[in-house]
Image 1 (tube, rainbow, N blue to C red):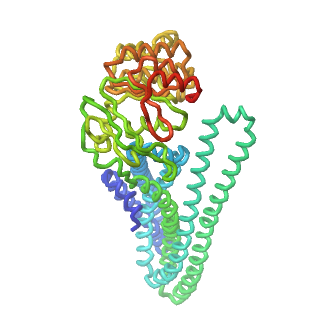
Image 2: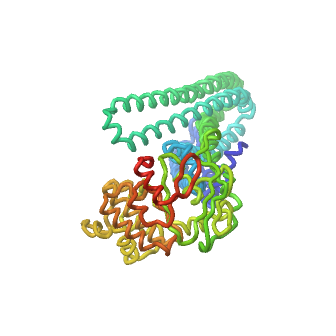
Image 3: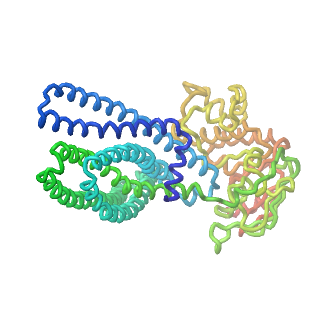
Amino acid sequence: MNNHLKRVLNYTKNYWKPLAFSTVAASLYGLTSAAPTYIIKQTIDEIFIKRYSSLIIPMIFAFLFFFLLKGILMYLTVYYMHWVGHRVVNDIRRDLFSKIIHFPTSFFQKNTTGKLMSHFLNDIQMIQTVASNCIKEGVRGFFEAIFLLGFAFYQSWQLAGLMLIVGPLIGIVIQRMGKARKQASRSIQVEMGNISTTLQESIMGIREIKAFNAEKTEQARFGERLEICFNSIMRNVHFESLSPAFVETIAMAGCGVVFYVAAHQVLNGTLTAGQLTAFVAAALLAYQPLKKIINLYSDVQYGLAAAERVFGLMDMIYPASQNRNLTLEKFEDEIRWENVAFAYHKDNPIIQNVNLKINKGECIGVVGPSGAGKSTICDMLLGFLIPSNGSVFIDNKDITKISFASLRGNIGYVGQHPFLFNDTIFANISYSRPGSTIEEVIEACKAAHAHEFIQKLSAGYNTMVGENGTLLSGGQKQRLTIARALLKNPDILILDEATSALDSESEQMIKAAMEDLKGKKTLIIVSHRPSMLENVDRIMVVQNGGITEISRQKYSEYKQSQFLG
């Protein structure tokens, strides 16, 4: 059995009781499906041949009883199989999310949002075909076909044996078509990911699209993606439609041979009309579940292509996430970068041979031209990036050995691109410390000078901010993210261009908040704004791949030469 299929089926173990109940119902459904064929035989032989008219009404009620029972068993089978199937899909989505949420930021830089969304929506939806429909149709169809074929063998094993001759031919057709569908499925899933990416980019970049009158360009780009995906889908439909045509042709050829032999047996008197009718009824009724089982092979291949991608993500291992056994209970002494280098591309290092020491309680200003590596240095401290060479230490502990939870638990971070969830202001700020009271949130907002504008909103702290804070101004969003970091009450606070979207008045408020924190927290302030660095203890310049400390006079010369922009 395919390993990916095994992994999908392993998820059903947690729900073995409803699955077992559904399986029993499916077996009884198969038995009740075969029962009417016996009644047909008795009806023809006893009523029409022997003319026992007294059996007409009992036979009618027998038919009604078995079909009513069949309907009840069908409902139970379908309901519980779907219940298990959807549970399995939820479990796979939960496990996939639990896996990738812990992946490093480099993973999300290399994989677009649209493609990741495609894994959760399209790929797992395809797996649902395997987990739900295939289990439902496969189990129910198996028992239905077994009992019907068993009854056909009971009526005439010779005729039933002839029918099985075409089995190998049908198997070859199914196998080849299944492989073709699997390849087509891979192409569809790739293109669906591209469509999701294009759509996501268009929505996120709507301001730029409109600013450059690029609506028609995006329409054409999206239309092109749709057309490519359409062609991939039609290749799959081609094989999906061709398979049953081949199977039915082969099956009907076999039925022709069976009918020829059966006709001679009836004429010779070795087979009664009732037996022939019952045999034909059983064979015809068995054809539909057999056809479903045959088609399931193709559907399974279609779903397995999606399972390969999903489980491929689940199986990814990042060495940087392993062996983090140290705990940083509290920042006590110093932070050190020793001979640190980092490169996104091997031949183009961003920084190299960086040596820096920050003592507890210091307030450090970091400046330098855009792209010099200021944010890179901060990201390494947070564990977002792993040095290509050298090491970063906190209290003489290599941060690559410290658990992410304890490392980031001691660090507060505010970036230049503030992010807010589509939730209330209170929920966004308390996100950094779940369980915080409204009083604690208000105190953090006052420290970030956000309380004033929040009070003026109609719903106050219960105001919804919109997707990524679209219902607030850039300055308001940034003050909320600063409040969120302050509520966390970390030992180390990083402000990476955190005042870039603030006006001068708001900046002065944040500057005052930073002054209050000096000596109490270890502050790392990355900023192009001279006013934010007026009272820092030391100023570090990142340039030409290195970092050096400069005096305030030297910093003034840099500002005057506009080196720092």
